[in-house]
Structures are given as C-alpha cells and as structure tokens.
Image 1 (cartoon, helix red, strand yellow):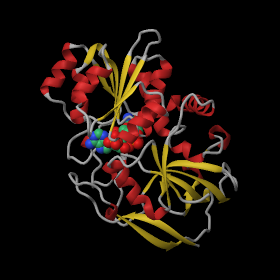
Image 2 (tube, protein in one colour; image 1 turned 120 degrees about the vertical axis):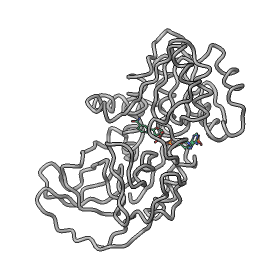
Image 3 (tube, helix red, strand yellow; image 1 turned 30 degrees about the horizontal axis):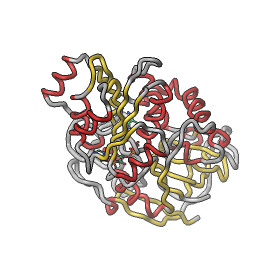
Image 4 (cartoon, helix red, strand yellow; image 1 turned 90 degrees about the horizontal axis):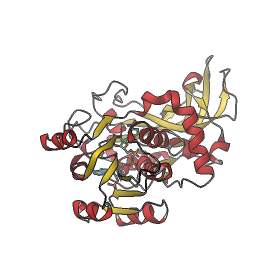
Length: 347
Ligand code: NDP
C-alpha cells in the first residue's frame, strides 16, 4: 500500500522560527501485515499544537515530550478509523484517537496506544476530539477549575490572552459560564476580535497588534482583573499582571510568545513583575493538563454536553491534505488560525 507521510527535514534551532521547509513529505510503501496487537488505521484528521515547537529541538527541555528525530515520521494528536485489526480492543470501523498519531495517511499502530471515541459525543464532528472535546478543551476547562478560582456571584473579571485560539476560545466561554461577569480577550487581529465578541460571547476584545493594550485593558476592565488565563506570556502578560487585583489568580497555561527562544519553561519573569505578584498576593502556578488525566473522562463528558447543547461554540480553521501539515503548523504558530487548527486528510 502506498502512503504519504511527513518527516522532520531539519531543525529550526532553539532560537529559530519554524518554516514549512523544516518538514518533508514522502511517499513510502506500507506493508499492511499486522502482528498480534496491531491495527491498520486510516488517518482522518491531525492536530498541530504549540508544544510541538519544542519537539523540533534536539532537546525538548521538558521531560514529558520527546524530540522528533530527523528524517523520521512526525507524530502528534490524530483521529482515524480502524481498517483492520489484530487487537482484541479494536474492531474494523472503530473511530480511534491517540496523542502519538503518525503524520501519515495510513499507519500500522499498536492497539494499546489508541483510545476508542464515540462519534455521538461530537455529533459526528470528529475533529472536535482534537480540540473542544479533546486536549485543548480539557486544558481550558481544567485549567480554570484547578487554578482560576472562579466563584459564582463574585463578579469577577477574566482576561484571556491567545483568546481566539483553541484553548483561549474555550477558556473565555467557560469563564463566563462559571460565573465571571466580564470576559475580555486579547488576540492578534480585528477578525479574531469580532469572532470573540459576536460568536463566542466575550464582553470585549483587544487586538494587541493594533491597539494600546494597557489603555484598552483599563477601559475594558474598570474593576481590575481577577483571573488571567495566560496562553502567551511575555510583554502582553506583563501588562495584564500589572492591572490585576489583590488576591487574584493567573492560570499559567502557556507562553507561546517565548517558544522560539532558548529559555526554560516557564520563562523567568522580570523582578518588577515578581514583585507585583508578591505585593498583590497573586497566585501563578504552572498548569499542565497531563497531570489531571484522572479528571479527563468526566471533563470530556461535560465538554461534549456543552458543545452539543450550544452553550459553547467551537471555532476551527481546517486545511486539507497531508502536504499542508508543515504550512499549517507554522501558520498556527504565527496566528493564522481562528479556533483549533485542524488538518483533514480523509472523510
Ligand atoms: P492556539 O490555537 O492558541 O494557537 C496559537 C496562537 O498563539 C496563535 O493563533 C496566535 O494568535 C498566538 N500567538 C503566537 N505567537 C504569539 C505571540 N508572540 N504573542 C501573542 N500571541 C501569539 O494554540 P493552543 O490553543 O493549542 O495553545 C495555546 C497555549 O496553550 C499555548 O501556549 C500552548 O502551549 C498552551 N497549552 C498548554 C497546555 C497545558 O497543559 N498547560 C495544553 C495545551 C496547550 P494571535 O493571532 O492572537 O497572535
């Protein structure tokens, strides 16, 4: 069987900006002969995610992800269908997902790394298992619930950075649903700002590329900021933290503005920001969704219900074809996506 796959062609270096040429599309022959425990899958859709940037480095700098190897098939979140199986837990026609799905049109995988998914949970919209009813939805929901201290009736204001992305777009909606009276998003274009307010019910949105963020934040958060869902770090987060209230909370979800720099995670804060955190008693604990997988099943059920009932709207940017994996990854890293970036390989 002829298949196409994407391999890592070269590394950007710890301080480099990833470009599509760091990836290479190849044709190869797959012998679909299965050993015990293996399944043949057809890939339906793949995810590109910011954490993959550190997998492009020789050393990822974190212990829970391994670097991609040069000229070897790249992997990440994926959803597909079982075409044949020699594994007792998977049958032909099952829909399955994995965090380590090869960027390949068809693949032989161990059944033990696959989780079966029920298409009814997403009304047949399988790519949601990579986003709103998958890891980015979980990150938003559990991040807020574990670190956000959102309290009904407390009239809190939440700010979300990276607000129009996969995690941010869900985080803002959960913040509002859980009781925040004002949810303000920060993102990189006017089109994204419009989507946040018109489609997702954010109270206001700020385009950090065009507007003066400190001034606009003051206008949009007249009572200060009680919860900050931080996806980006860097200068934007410094400005938000400076306007946070006493005893407020940062959900330290991600720091994408620093991912093309050779700095540890989380990147060190300036002395001034550290002093603000101390003086105002602001909590800022690192949140890693993988540490809360014992809560994943019930959280995924909740997300499924919220999406199916329309209480949460899902935005996606979908491109077609395995040949566009590299472009889609690099575009997402620069803000080309609204909502979750998905690559569709087959129906
Ligand atoms: P997104 O869908 O949000 O895509 C990334 C977005 O980041 C882009 O669309 C872009 O939007 C924004 N961005 C890129 N560069 C910058 C910059 N220099 N300054 C400000 N914004 C920038 O990705 P995800 O939702 O998948 O991930 C969001 C964050 O959540 C990441 O930091 C990621 O690492 C983190 N994460 C953390 C997890 C955890 O367990 N803690 C799990 C999953 C994700 P714009 O147009 O607004 O610039």
